[in-house]
Length: 277
Image 1: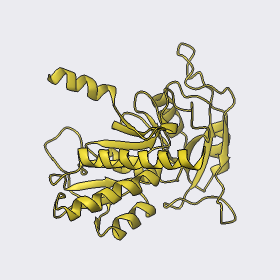
Image 2: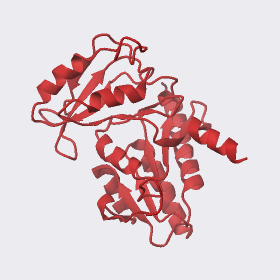
Image 3: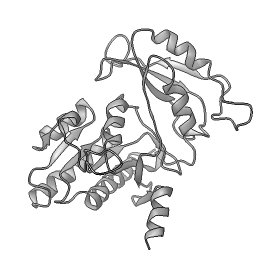
């Protein structure tokens, strides 16, 4: 990609982040989840602008999903809080939520808004915050927009594991078969998954997450049944969290190659909206 094309993509990512913030964050939002990654930097930039315009809640609380996002919140002059310090938004609701909306990045998003996250190693905290949110809004560029997970993201599923026994977990991951039962379609493409311990770049040894764990990147090819694969991996003892996010995102905003932006709504939300009309 040429430098001019790269610049255009960055501009479109910034516009997508601004549009997502403008749609979902106003003075009624009391608690906001701040995700991780390059696109979230642009989202935080927009939050600072809105605060200067007095368009944010005067006592807005921001929940970080990583060390990086906590620093972004602090440097922006916003208030960072831990998830466990928050009360339930609506005790009378059938589902738990302590965060109004979370805005986060993604490594890949499929047509059903299932996502792969964890390229930055923060997917445990990202999933905790997303699961405690009324809405999860994703931001990415067009290179991460796919029909099926694994179509464009070729670095594997990020799996956070305990350092104790990580080799045993690795062996079990590599013995997974794509056919989970004789009567079902294959859950993923590869007959021989490969799990690699993620290595640090400017440090000898493996990447250590914010939580003190290791990451195995598990390559399985295309993922045909994302919820089933997420459950399968999560059941292995020693696995802390899986970088597959299913049924959590309500919207995804993409910065396109030509500088434009696009928004995709989850199928469940589309049906809900249609039924309300």
